[in-house]
Amino acid sequence: MIVDGNRAADRAIELVLAYYAAFNRGDWEGMLARLDPDVAHDINQGPREVGKVAFAAFLARMKRCYREQLKDIVVMANEDGSRVAAEFVVHGEYLADDAGLPPARGQAYVLPGGAFFEVDDGRITRVSNHYNLEDWIAQVSA
Image 1 (cartoon, helix red, strand yellow):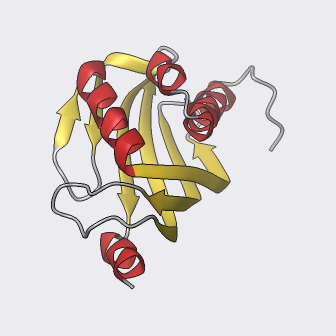
Image 2: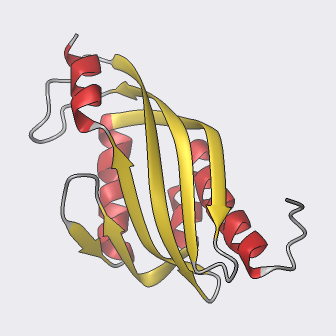
């Protein structure tokens, strides 16, 4: 596929790639700038949170507890760019205890993951993250 930025699917893919580029830079404001004010965030094996304020609080917890980089990112979209899927590999370090999870001791982990997005009017309106929590727990508990 040639990404030329003129098709809705291309623009949606570029939006999600920019969101992940901001993540990899630790640029939380850059991530938030790509979100709709009423973004729905489906946390892996957790509740749905709504709004940029809740998403910013989630990012603050992530910054405190984890250092992560996403690699091997693949993004695809439907023709009208309203639905986007991404697959990636998380390379991370568990820095500080996160509620309900094993104690942190700086453990490294590598974990495949994915996310689904809804996009409307150039903004991400839903992010649903998915990864194998049992695999992550096994890695940080070893």
